[in-house]
Image (cartoon, rainbow, N blue to C red; front, side):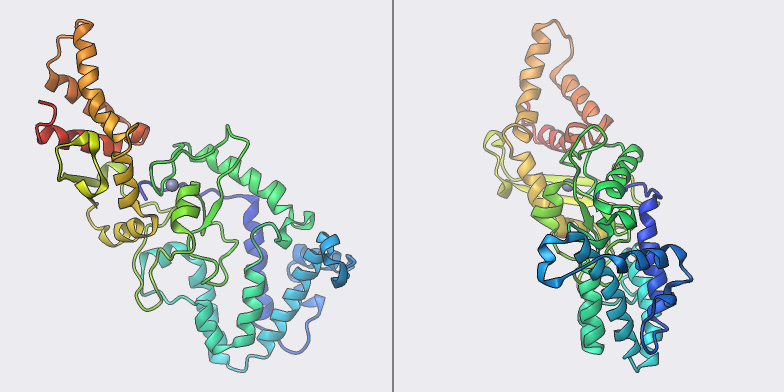
Length: 372
Ligand SMILES: [Zn+2]
């Protein structure tokens, strides 16, 4: 990613707080049968559980009773996971789970340290099949249209918590561009529509972090749906790699990225991706950049941008046309000076009008004598 986001604290984090409590205070110590009193150390969650318990639910008519379905799902999941934990006879594994829970939620450290042990659903399945089944059913359904957190008892995730989080998020993150590509604009506080939040560490592979907002980042639709999908930014279990953390305080500045473009053709008007070689470097971030380029297909997308008739090709022709216009209007700049002023402009605000890559492209065309 080209730049980091600023993390914001928000009431939405209370949902992860409930889950932390369930894991560390309730499920880990599961013994015998579940009873509501197991939740009484967390008054808020205890009250919610009792309220949801009063909601009528008939599984035969689940479709007609969304509230009942969600209430039943949440409470019955707590109970089923409690039972699954109670059935785990391996105390050493339960102890390991404490670390795994903490690690799977430490998104910054997962990105920074490929040796940090994390738990995947596959690992869990081979160890404790029933616990795997119950946790996956629960965590897989905590985010999205069927989340029990959409109930008003939890503060209405979909209709209240997320929209207010989104607004506050983009009041603090004002660049207006997607940090994962630097190409697309993001819908922000002036739009009525929203970008989707991406689960940076895929929630389908790693338990415990599906509602952790350090693992959730708004992303443009191209990055999220077309390119990243469920691809793992941290590699595979046996071959992990470092990755940029979206909320890092030590992310390289956009000007610290060195982009190199090699042109294998002089025919810019008919430029094709195969005519281009692209390299992106930033000292000390080789692994992060590789993962970023792989998951977001940066190579393909930047080359397509350069070969776009209305972008890269126009950047090139605009230099010639712009210079002729300036001259006709009485400008005394030489062509070299005019080009230099355009490159300085492009570099000035790198995220505006693709300046970060436009400047490199124009410099390369100049170096190859294509403006002469
Ligand atoms: Zn993007």
